[in-house]
Every structure is written in structure tokens, then in C-alpha cells.
Length: 157
Image (cartoon, rainbow, N blue to C red; front, side, top):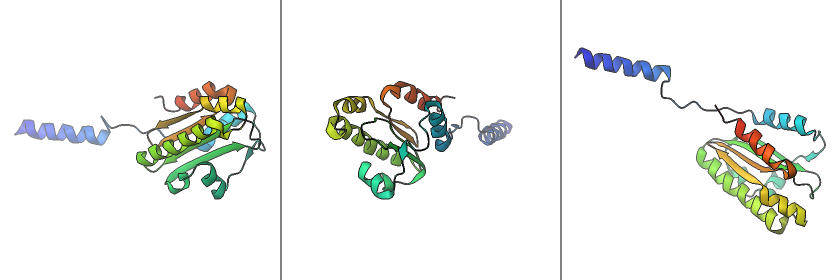
């Protein structure tokens, strides 16, 4: 009987201390983008503000998902391949759905939506990266690999 009580007591202690619990990463996506903006010196006027209508046009269905954070950056010039979506969703299911929506954007741009051959080539390199409830679409042109690494580094323990 003492062994059972001791085992139960130790189990409760382990649960309360968080032993074995998965620690969830928290990322401030606005701060993440601001660090990128400073590093790459895009400036305040490089990107356009996106209203609900333009978001729906670029990423159909994305606005219907429940987000905790959403940062969307689209350059003013369409020839510039420098488009980013960083989002945190309420659920992993919404994040997966968003990933599919964003992959469709990448595919559309790479298959002619970007108009210019060099831009379509750059869109072919774009990536959609999902980490639990977090999603990034990175179409970064010549900075693609470095931007992907910056995103991935946020999720390393």
C-alpha cells in the first residue's frame, strides 16, 4: 500500500513540475519581421498595406482561419520577389490549412502569375514552412535561404 501511495505521489509531483510536458515555443511575429526589416533595410515604404479584400485576392480562404498573429508583407513592385506571410493560428489544423493556401500562392506565382521569367524562377524557390501552429510563406528571392534559416532558428530549443 505504501508503494502505491509513493508511486501516486511521485506521479503527481512529476505532472505538477511539468516533467515530460512539451514546452511550446512562443514567437512574436511582428518582432521577427522587424528584425528582418532592419537586417535587410527594406524600410517603411517598401511593402504595401494589405486590406481584407487584397488578402482574399492573394490568399483565398486565409482570412477565414482563426489567427492569433498575422504579418503579411507584399512589395509595392510586382517584379520584386519579396513576399512574406508569418502567422500563428489557434489550432494546428488551421495552420495546415493555411499551409495549403500559401502553397497554392507559391505554385500560382511560379507557374506564370509572377509574369516575369526571373520572378517565376524566384517563386519556384519560395517555401511554406509549418511548425505546429506557426506558418511562414517565404518568397525571398536572393535572400531565400537566409530568411528560411532565420525562421527555422526561432524553433530551435
